Image (cartoon, rainbow over all chains, first blue to last red; front, top):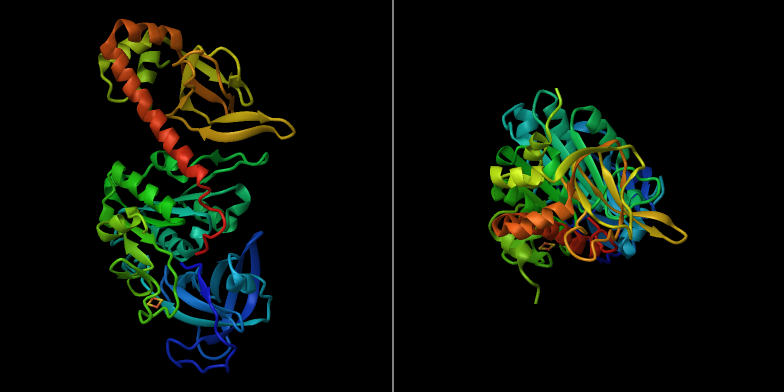
Length: 296
Length: 156
Ligand code: FES
């Protein structure tokens, strides 16, 4: 999702169904500090029903009086409970959101954009028997969390899920409890960090170095990638070199979002309007070229 | 039933697809080894006369930093190779390699292999092409890590 932010004025509390440009007020009902600069906010609407979304979609979150920022949903439709957003403190708005406390009210606009396409597995049982390979870098695990929840649940009846997570250091890896639960439920979970600490007993190295050891069948796999763009580019290329079909690789792109509904053009990337055509897009074809293109 | 060194080599990723002739040449320079957790496979500054094809267990590549103790730069997994300093003078290890788990490996005598490569250029070329492929992959991974991918600015 997006790191850029823009300001919005503090406004009246809107009613549900007020339109895609009007934030719906939500209360922070729980807050989990994931790492030193990342927090997950659990949100309930002040009025009306919980938002209906698909894993991979994003909402525009507003810290009233500060601004608005696009953040992917990190809960799963199937787990119920409050809407979750995992936010990293990288700017004024995200800073205000990360500092929110239980009881605070923020604005939520959305959900917007495309998703990880997990519905066929959940609703159609074993309709897709390919291995699922999920590669996440840093906080890139957050937009994938909902999809993972659904994929691992669907795989209980057969099927394989491989979860490869890279981070700068062990302290930066989020969702330890979820990773442990998914491993217990049969997923292959592998972690690697760029910088070790004395306590770390796991892998040290680039996230792509885990691909060859994971054990998935490249010719019968689909892959979901989320993280820094360079990481996704190298990971996608490595997967294609192993034999994964480029059309079976999905990446989540991060661009400057403002309206979130395809009106303003701020999120344009080549022929794509990322808030509408993305954030989740197939790697093959136009995206492969765009990710390799040098910015002028 | 014990597995022969030849079988171990034939099954290892590093030599996969290189053909029987290359395999037979390498077998004459190889023997099976094991290390306990914490044992050093290579010591920085020591003479580099051997390299290891890892079969099981993980190895950490470490640099000893004053005031910080050993800093793990990278870990090496089964199927990969530990040690490249046997390739070029002055044949001296530039890093420590330590067994994290119980490690099983095939140790290969670097001097023996160099001598065979000099005598048989076709073998030498095949070997160096394979070594270069591994080194390039490691170099590329190191370059990307140097970018500090997950630093500030990446938000999602
Ligand atoms: S954010 Fe306005 S068009 Fe995408």
